[in-house]
Length: 277
Length: 304
Image 1: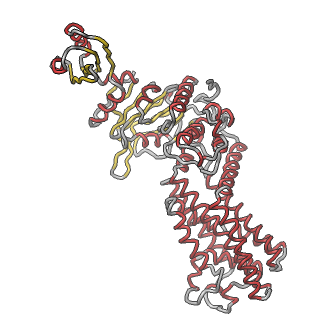
Image 2: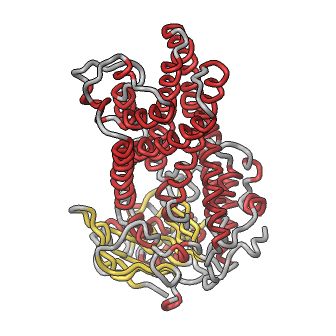
Image 3: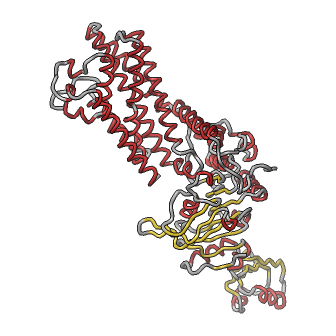
């Protein structure tokens, strides 16, 4: 067997054009998305669950209970959008990073000349794609069945904010992925995911005694931002429990909190990756 | 490149907590050589490779890779790596893995060329999760080659391979060295090192205890093995000077001797029914056992 040309001289120049480096990033993104889409344990729950639950609870159940009240329809669209943004980031980063660490794929890629952070950039792009697909499916369901009466501009603004608002969940997922084993990562991700979801006040008004805990959930802040765009109060306010965090702060504060969660958890995770791998 | 070495560890020390993994360790990888790094589990082999690849930093001493720091991505573009116990993304096909890793390198081979050279065309379109253990090693070998590396790090590359796949990999490795590639091979299969290595370094307790060619390593063990058919009894031969041990196996005497020449001469002169003489040097495995069973003393310099 001839292997002529298989080896470059040791002294060969090994600089890479920026076009080739871009191609490496894009290929990493392409295959990260492909592997996520081919992984039914990830793609089915996080692509299909938001749309199925939105139609069941947000459109059919809430619609029949509110007798077609547009405010409730708007609130449901915003709340289920928040729900749809949480899973891909938390589990996409949490599970895949933990698995790649445990299987030493992260170590192999550090030894190889992978462009800086390409695997994390690719995961970010993959979760953004999933978030966009979820928003697209929710918007189609809203237009066909939910009828929240939003303008195209409002749908667009909600989509952009929701995708941006998935960042803190990505950062928390990454943090879990850098600390937990592949087996423990789903459990830890759920330990954060479920409280975030319920304390976010997405599904039912929280009792007053529990309302201060809403401050702990990034979902609460994202929900408040989306509700502002669609023009609806959150569930606490709708049920006239006007005390507590729901009446506190404004959009600037919500953005600051979501940004801070993203920066702190991402920084802790990246520091851990650099030190321990 | 300093001193013409493709990779170098000089006076390297590395500890993990209270455990000293490497204690004043030196290693050079020369152009166009296959260097086998041998040692018992926990001897420091993996740490040495990690330092050369920039995966860890030495506490003292220096690590160099293709003339610069191993942290320099440009240096790592000259390197191919095959690690132990790595799991690639289960959902991606072998062809897709090769395409992805190829984009990390400035002048990679085409995917079809990689598949051809590594004899992996038959599994190119199979998801990684569906491969057998040996096929996974072949796929990882393909990834190590795809960037046309000048220096290959292979950690236990043939674990799980069937005989035919192992023979193919060995032949590819020989061809790569012939074409100018240097290879650092860690293996527990000593016959693999014996068959492939231009040079062997034995590590024990964080230090290089010996380095040299396979023949030079074998010579560290002075004894030879003699087998023959003879009317002499085992007890009689055991009393001869230079004889370490004698056994009778299947009607033949198996003698281990430190002075094989005089023992053979005496066998020929003194025995009736003497026939079927075989004399064989100690293998690398025996040299390895002898070197690593003793506490790490000063390096046995048997370097060419």
